Length: 504
Ligand SMILES: NC(=O)C1=CN([C@@H]2O[C@H](COP(=O)(O)OP(=O)(O)OC[C@H]3O[C@@H](n4cnc5c(N)ncnc54)[C@H](OP(=O)(O)O)[C@@H]3O)[C@@H](O)[C@H]2O)[C@@H](O)CC1
Ligand SMILES: [K+]
Image (cartoon, rainbow, N blue to C red; front, side):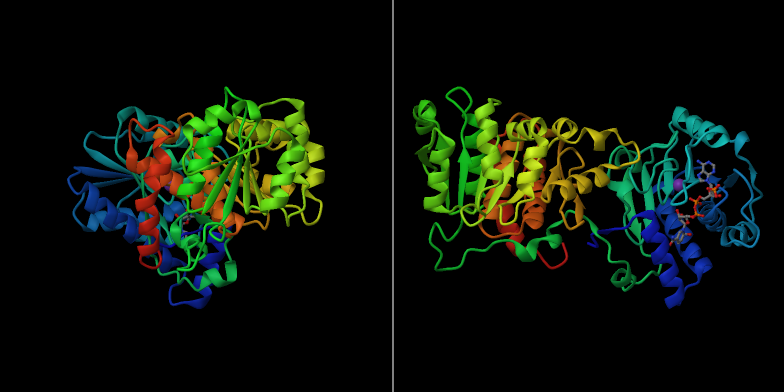
């Protein structure tokens, strides 16, 4: 599967480069785009009594005129509804002239029973919120419950952000071209696309060498090469040592979930660092996980100095007391030789929001541990309120800005989790299941990530792999999932990753 994601601007560049390289000119690409949509309509909605094609004034509308001509030639009764004539001399104008069906004004459109609607109003060129005749047509479509096939994107969905500008139809199917756009994977756009088909319209993959996209769908092909594999001679510490900080006696479960997940993700050794008051309760629940008493920042530092672990999970169940904040701050600025990576999750993110400037200053010190931050939207809003308030930013933009600000990798969680690295790379996760929205699920994600980091996986790849594994485990289990189930679901998935064919 091709996993690059192109912004609408990058897609325009792909279009120009492909036309320059040949063999297809703009009209050739449009004919192939329209043919891909018509084929999908005939395959999925071959039984429809008629097709209503809604055509906008740009090239998205141009694709619509090609679809109308091809469906007409295939014997489907076709009606064309136009928002306005295409600009003279444009490819869309040629496509409209080649279409044997006379268009009627979009304002007269009413979906007929048993007909399929092809939405070709706007695609990559959406430049403002839908209103007037376009918004009214979409509203009539939604009320009638007609099946909609969207060309490129449901009109009104921003390809760059997945946001709805004004209005957008809920498509049954969306046919896009060459590569997915962020709007196909980010909500709410993702929910409005229905099934998304990526059609080959004759743009060669070679254009990507010039465009160098920095956003990807999170699939194993993105990180599999860096996925850790133990050598035959590995011993437990060589397979990576993870430390997990436990909270007090009444809040120990979260850290144990992280610890189990780190172990299942392949860390050879996992140590839970527990305050004295919580040792008994932790001991009663642990077998393969090691337990060490650590009541103070000094005792934690001493263990780090002795063991030099690859990764530490800091946050789940840790507590919001000021001294916990002091301890986390000292970890953020510790020598990276003593601690390779820190995963800041849960309560650590609240401390980060309270003392942001101090944490950011510590993060900027040279030689400190690499960091992965794992906020859900609520935590993100507390740590980066100015990014959330900026309406012009997509979820993708926000994660990237947060990564740049902290110099770390950010996993911005949700049904469309975005992973962003400080170098500008980003990935959008698409395999999460709704059952993952359950208490403790995030603690498991932090633990998987730490387990992979401790085995030497670089932070961006480890964060992507963790989000994917977590999503896959949740999807496979289905309803009834609780966080305790997740670590035990990992082994067969890990085995499959090693066996996967190239490119998946
Ligand atoms: N790139 C490729 O490789 C290929 C691309 N192809 C196809 O081209 C599509 C992109 O075409 P495109 O650039 O002409 O933009 P498109 O979406 O038709 O809209 C532009 C027009 O709509 C107008 N307009 C915008 N928003 C509006 C609103 N809310 N309300 C009212 N008007 C609004 C806008 O007006 P303006 O902003 O100029 O004022 C302009 O007139 C792409 O999605 C794909 O389907 C394929 O043919 C094959 C190869
Ligand atoms: K469209």
